[in-house]
Amino acid sequence: MTLDGQAFLEHFRSMSEIGATAGGGVDRQAATVADGQNRHWFRGVVESHGFEVRYDEVGNQFALLELAPGAPWVAVGSHLDSQPTAGRFDGAYGVLAGAHAAARLAGLEGAKYNIAVINWFNEEGSRFKPSMMGSSVFTGKLAAEAVLETTDPDGVSVREALEGIGTIGDFALEVAAYVEIHVEQGRSLEDSGAQIGLVESTWGAHKYEFTVKGEQAHTGSTMIADRRDAMLGAALLISSARDVADRFTDESGTVVTSCGELYVYPNSPVVVASEVRMLVDIRATGAERLEAAVAAFEERIREAADRARVEIERGAEHSWTAQEYDGRGVELARAAAESLGLSSRVVRTVAGHDSTNMKDVVPTIMLFVPSVEGISHNERELTRDEDMTAGVDLLTEVLRRVVRGEYAYAE
Ligand SMILES: [Zn+2]
Image 1: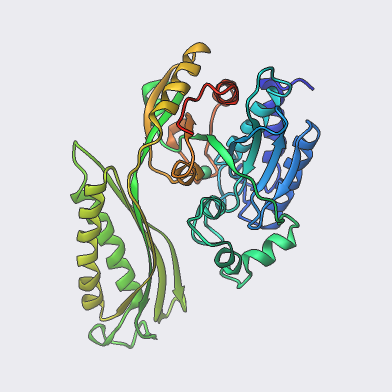
Image 2: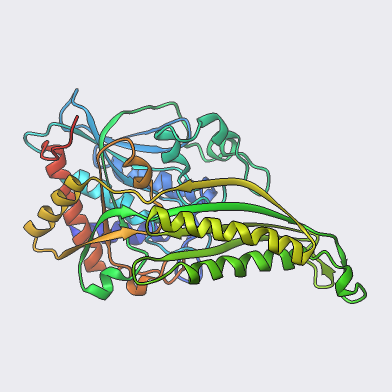
């Protein structure tokens, strides 16, 4: 089979049937049965095109294509895991695009590098926290042992889950550069009419885990003054986060905040909640803006605890500052897009990606294709066929230049 755009779309449609949901999306959370099926399906696809597949100690999946035996490796990848009731494109598009781009370069004359297509384990962080787990271990930001012992809400560890789907090993690889393509998950490309986003920087982010502790009581017979309502404490944190977003957003920059997850105990219609576990995240353009937003939010934690008469415990926190991608990579990708007649513009990424980790250790190029209406983490997520295939063409051209040694980064 020749790996043209049509072949890519056929593979993409087949993959989208794995873990498919009734609403047109997928549910392939990390190391679930559906994620395992998808990983094995992907293995079959790449092996039929001459790749060898390996797993490292935390389940990162490597599809290896030798172009220059003995030469160093460059990597291209993204993640096959998804959120619950997710779209079909987030992450999965980039892994399959990477495989097609690499396969199109098989037998390339004058290659100075080999290509590893990487499916990073648990980028989404919905089942096991934190997100971007596989690439965090690969880049030395998290210890493999700690990751393997991390459990999901049912008490299943990463190690058990990965062994259960048979996708864990002891492979290790050094890579010299990294390229990733992903759906934008925002609307700046669609709004501007550009076909390709060249990512120049990330946003900064600070993520909190809170446990709000009150006291269980009857929702009818317990007077308001006597209540220690954990749900109220959680609600005050949520609305405080929103106030912070409004206060620190102006013409020169943006703050976005959210609480995407709550576990309420006992979660009964006639019981005042005694405990709420929740996550809050604050993201901002620029380091100073993030710092100011975080400080303002933290002042409000005490106020929320006092008003609801609850205790608010802070758990694990993760923070990263807004960071630049390698400017030479942006230029290489811009030139590659131009050579194919594709329009491009420079964008920032709000969402975290595996490339956010990789860019801290190797020269990294990050590309976006448009998302219709910017919808993401939603079954209605959509990237048009012609935008997907244009992205694969560009990724192939970028990878060709990198593999030929044209990415003139410092060794
Ligand atoms: Zn993603």
